[in-house]
Amino acid sequence: MNYTIFHWINNWAGSSALLDKEMIFITNSAPYVAIILMFSLWFSNGQKETAIRKQYTVLYTALSASAALFLNVLIHALYYHPRPFVTYHVHKLVPHAADSSFVSDHAVFVFSIAFTMILRGESWRNIALLWAILVGISRIYVGVHYPADIIGGAVLSFVTSALVIKYTNKIEPLARLMFQIYAKITKRIPLLSKSNHTA
Image (cartoon, rainbow, N blue to C red; front, side, top):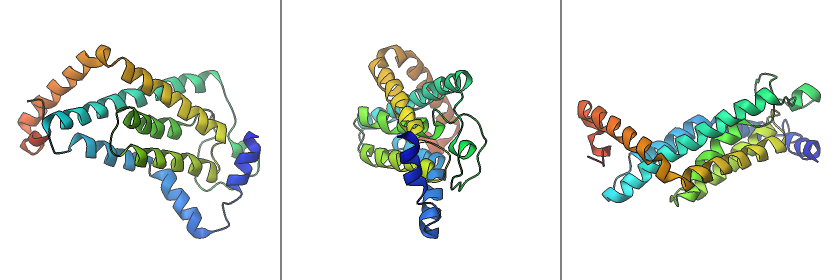
């Protein structure tokens, strides 16, 4: 089933130059869209309480993504699953090392952002989820991941995001420390002072 679904999606690669370019663009978009989403939350204007809440979402997202990526490092160290292009002849549209396929780092990263935004009730949560799903599909399309790699990344990200949100009271000392550090930075960089909502 895993390979069957992979083959069906990846088999579309090469059939349309435009679709290939779009999928490559989406698969490479992860860090850039992540920056846009996080910056839009951190530097949002509006009521003080709402602005602070959005900055907390950024902190929780960073913690969730970091935890999920760390766990994925352990998974890769303990379990090796060859990538599709190692085992089969596939349409491989982007360069990639022949390291372990399960779980997808890209999926872990983008779904950590999406799930944290969903659990926090952010207004862009549906856009973030749609983007995460598209990135996941694109990783299959370009030939570097199986569907199970993407699903595994989504599940891992949901677990870490849910745990971070559940234990926000435990994280609060760290969050306050981060805001204190940021407050000191904004004093030296006036351009950032408007985003220092905790001052």
